[in-house]
Amino acid sequence: MASKILFPVLLAAIFDCAASFLISARFPSSLFQVRNELSPRTKQWNGHGINAFSPAEISIRRQTSGNVKMGFHSGITYPVRVAILGGGNFGLCLAVVLGNKNIPVTILVRKEHVASTINSEHHHPTFLSDVKLPLCVTATTDPAIALTDATFIIHAVPVQFSRAYLRSISSHVGVNTPIICTSKGIESGTLTLMKDILYQELGAHRELAFLSGPSFAREIATGLATAVVIASNHEKLAKEVAELFSGPTFRVFTSRDVIGVEIGGAVKNVVAIAAGMCEGLGLGTNSMAGLVTRGCLEMNTLARAMGAKPSTLMGLSGVGDTFGTCFGPLSRNRQLGFRLGRGEKLEDILSSSAEIAEGYATSLSLVDFIDQKLTRSFRKDLKFPILYGVAAILKGLRTPREGLMDLMQLPLRTEMFDNGSYRVVKLRE
Image (cartoon, rainbow, N blue to C red):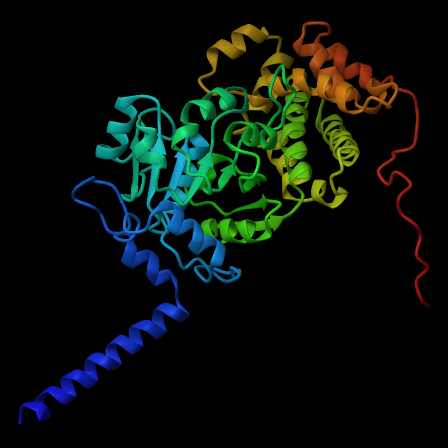
């Protein structure tokens, strides 16, 4: 009698387990839901399974899991927790993107009251303060708490402060933890790009990915549609990061051209300063469009000389980011140039801004970078008149009007966008 009663129950249990297995295999996103439960002990999202796996075990799962399939929630089948270095605008907007997908995020900030406000009131007290952070986003000032078991670490610290910051937290970063870098520019003094800074401070064999493209933080945080590119020498990591971030309003493409993405991200900020000067001087739409276009040529020329693919500079991290930064009202670099064009002093502009315009330091470093890297090139001021001109203005050697009028007096020449690298193909009649 008992066996007749237990048999249907047992059969139902087996069917239920089999159905659950098939659903989780077909829709791995359920793993995010199951593992992302709030821990009463730490008041942090530890994913119910995050602490059950050591960082080494999670790394093995990343390396041995099958190829990540593109598409929402289709490839990552291991428990995920993301740490973000830096609580500025861009770090916060990425926390919103991930948090909206129920992915646990810990932001490492410098000040205790900032962490307390984020944890208790779910918003940052200064940056994007009107944006509500998802409940699975928390903050701490302790790098051990933020980084020890992180699956991915997002670096969102300005370039000029990155080396010292990374050195201070490097002992807490797992040996195999990938870094997703959002910082753009060239380090002053060393003339180093972020890829080399990360390798030097966190180890030469670490997997790195670089996120770039037209991406104003406020628009991302408020759910406006955005498209970016993630570049990595490790194709699998690029696909994992694209899977991690992609959602209904955030589209991520992949690339292998790290140097192209880095050069594009650095140069576009300098071009944006020039565009802002153009607007501040009231020179009109024609001059603005011409200047930005020629700025894209200088970006392309430098990137090609560094081994980048020209197609990368025609994509989101090149002209896409340049257009957004030069014409977008939220651009700090464009605003810096605009105020210079209006006649304000540089020191007054820098001291009155709470946020850093990366283009200022990058512009001064970029001309030295070009001089150092392109040693065989001559008359670089003619090949890169906008980049050299902006640096001269920021150094106080020229006024914005003098600098921009100098561009109109350059020697006449061909437009040079093809660089002689294309041939004419006769079409069939």
